[in-house]
Image 1: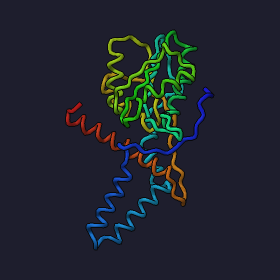
Image 2: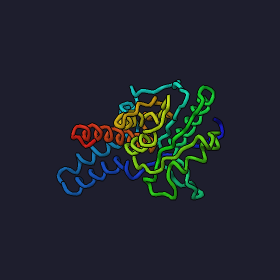
Image 3: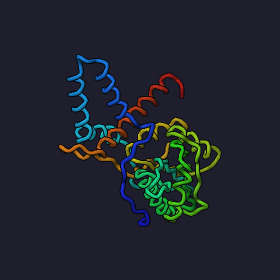
Image 4: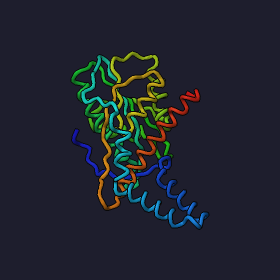
Length: 255
């Protein structure tokens, strides 16, 4: 699948501003608690360096990626359904709405799995699941569809779920689409860091897809602070908070 070429770019979505919130809290404490300004400054600077230089980001990413089920060679049935989870959109330098970097990896992986499926199964379908949580000009599913078509996914095999705003809704809406349909194999494609939480949400609706990761996030550990390490930490913390939220809601009986 060689038609998609891109340079990954760091990004932060409004729902993932965890690092910003953390340092905003340090700033508030700094302003309101004068006697503690020096230790607060030292603590904030140390934490920033540990995250930006990768020393703390690396174990955070490992926490959400290591040990996560990942199927390198998924099984294809007579009718196989491949689910691609959205990963956001952004505007490029020409003000064109495009998939974000991790989403493009997911598109490439989906096209690769689809091509392999076409060699082994009678029917292969791709469900692209992603609404418009960023309130851009189009939904994730509608934005990704042309990329998949260019990667030789047949239009008749492509289905769009463009109403979901988060992973839980991805699972709920896909489950609704498949509820009265027969399929022999179900495959879920997303980034490695996102797989664990996605599988929990899909299991909540009675689905047990084969998990396939599209890409893995790695921290660059060293002495120099890097913006990409802060983004990686932000993503890892977002997933950890999401996992904690899932188990809390489950314990409370909310779902």
